Length: 347
Ligand code: NAD
Ligand code: WQD
Image 1 (cartoon, rainbow, N blue to C red):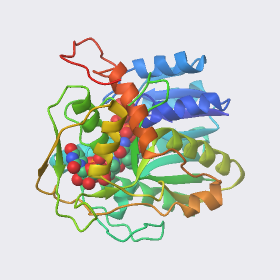
Image 2: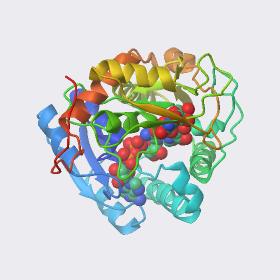
Image 3: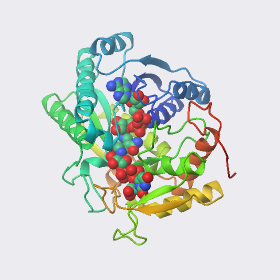
Image 4: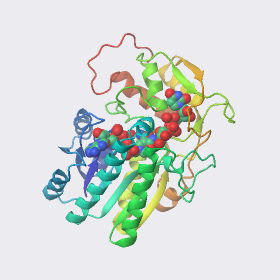
């Protein structure tokens, strides 16, 4: 199949592109590089030994989008492109609605014009809001609590309405829990710009000497060790979930929703401990107040994805940390790896 991957230069998109190529598909990556580096696409080519067409296009540019759909005949689209920082979305809601919602509308219009109606969309567990009911299944009411999450909820609504209006559409809404890890080669991985918002990249930057210590947001949650619990899922397991979804949509039309998580929760302290073991020395941390809006516990009920797609996540937290560390250790400054690191520890 020929697949268009929007946001394919980013963290999850680059890993999924690699899995698609390994699975025999042809891939065109579309990305405006606002939060990524084209080097990721080059490295995907290097690892796979396959060519990837790359088009530097902004989803807000409808004319350029049409040109991509005129140039290639796609069987399906996997849509990762979007802005994803919760805090920034609170400060700049218009930029988030514009980029994520309007960008997706532009993509859907271009798909309609090109008569391509198969789409896998990157949704998020964030659509469930700060619910502490676990495990979370797909029937939970949606209650996103910030502008970023609401863009995901709104796009889910748009796609549901589209599927109801035109049964030719084949849509998978994939609600990721907490992506972590990197491809086992250590050549591609997460490369956040500025201060990482998420736990794993922050821990990794402390481990590699770029930051002094991890700040643990809250040690007084009603959890066994007092810290927040999340469902961390290896990015290569996530990538496999996308391949499974594309295969499923090959045979069926309609709009489908699946959680992509492991069904297991890990606390912040368990993550820091597992990462320390991967590195071979202790990653320093200190406690601070809870971060506003955080749930105590969140993990998936992934049963529907297993039943419908035959997919489940099988990589462990230890593997996520080992793979994340291999990437960070080999690329301390990510894809712009030209700055000297003061001291590198560990294996
Ligand atoms: P990322 O920032 O690494 O990748 C997103 C890519 O989209 C980037 O390469 C960026 O340059 C590109 N992009 C953004 N706006 C664009 C536009 N207007 N036109 C073209 N390209 C554009 O993020 P990621 O972690 O790989 O996330 C991928 C998707 O998964 C996002 O939609 C995100 O909201 C969603 N998601 C991520 C997580 C997570 O924790 N990483 C969790 C759940 C859902
Ligand atoms: C995980 C745990 C924090 C950083 C976010 C988005 C969600 C989705 C995934 C996109 C929590 C704690 C974190 C730190 C810490 N993204 N923590 N110190 O909040 O579950 O989900 O990313 O869709 O929408 O909200 O992930 O990695 O930020 O936090 O103690 O420096 O780590 O309190 O318990 P979260 P996270």
